[in-house]
Amino acid sequence: MTRDKEQSMDDQSPAVVRKGIDVTPNKDGGVCKVEASTSSSMSSVVKKWGEDGDRPMIGDKVTVHYTGKLLNGKKFDSSMDRKKAFTFSLGKGQVIKGLDIGVSSMQRGERCILLCKPEYAYGPAGCPPKIPPNAMLQFEVELLSFKGELLTDDGGITRRIKVKGEGYNNPNDGSTVHVHLEGYCGERLFDSRDVHFVVGESEDMGVPLGVDRAMEKMQKGECCMLYLKPKYGFGKEGRAQYKIGPNSDLVYEVTLINFEKAKESWELGLKEKLDFSAGAKQKGTQYFKAGCYLQAVVQYQRIVSWLEMEFVGKEQQQTVQNFLLVAQLNMAMCYLRLKEYALVVENCNKVLELDEKNEKALYRRGEARLFRNEFNLAMSDFKLVLQVNPSNRAARSQVSICQRKIREHHEMDKKTYANMFQKFAEHDVKTGKGKRRGGDCGVMNQNHPVGIKRQRCSQDHGQDRP
Image (cartoon, rainbow, N blue to C red):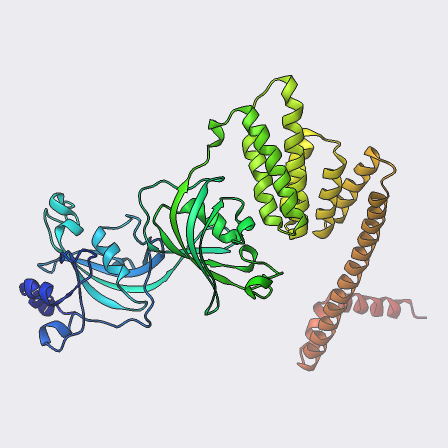
């Protein structure tokens, strides 16, 4: 955009605002997006239409390029000048209100002009020295990309918020929630209902773990889209009642209608914690037997969260320790089934901190290390099991397996190195032949130690002749 065109737009800024599209939710003209127009004064400010109909939602990570100017055309900020796109979480107050609102109205790839009234920018205070008080601002913005908020480290649950909830209060583990949900597999709606469930126990109501885990991030009244990978949906088994096949991705639209929070850990007395731990242990066993290993882990983690930092007298110490041992041993077993071997080792280590001769912890850690091809470490664990219980046949068998694996590994290494050295030798031979064909071999042989040695041998033989 040339300076003359910018000034022309600034001189006619009231008209531009009137002709623009008001994108503020309450339609007070606070943020206007200038769209395409046939008038010569308007056509210069429109840059590019978006690629599709999808728009970012609250909480999405959006990436933009922008240039901010006062109405007199003076530039006060630009990501283009820094040659680095700007990323922020939409609707989280990380930018001025006008940008949050304006960008939420854009499509991927769209480039437009946003005009923001002072109350949607820096207000009566401004942002000295670049932005004066009560300044109306214009932003040229290009929406490069956006993606939902990841709720898990493994990317298994992605949330996109359609309607923001009320306040800052969230359900906690154990809360009773009332939700409306609609579940989709592809384009097919397979579940639509209002349902109550306890956070951490949604499986009891046929609600997948991904929805359950998202509850602790939601506020009352929030409506969001949840994109679930199979691990957080119905897994490798699928769900016959909904005609969901194995390893299917799911999408849920979830509205949190209401909830009743559970007591926090610090609000519970020891007796309550022990009673709840007994219930969680039973529930975890139920989920484990049903093959719902992640759901079982949630129950065992509850026990750890309640009791791990509990300081008690000698009378109750053994009871607390027994609950912790069972919870972490069972988590290790769940993670073995889930093939999360690092977490198996982690939980077994915690058990061994409490009981260094725990037979099950040593054995399960050995299994995890064997699956990770850590044969020597695994064999050490199984030998420790035999020190604790010499009659453990399974451990004795595993020692033999480890020994065989170590031998096989050594044989494989020998073959690998032998093949590698053979290839090096073949390469050297080919390289040497190529040099001799080049005509320089006479000079090189004279400088080579072997060539020198042969020359000396020839001279010696000459002296020794009769």
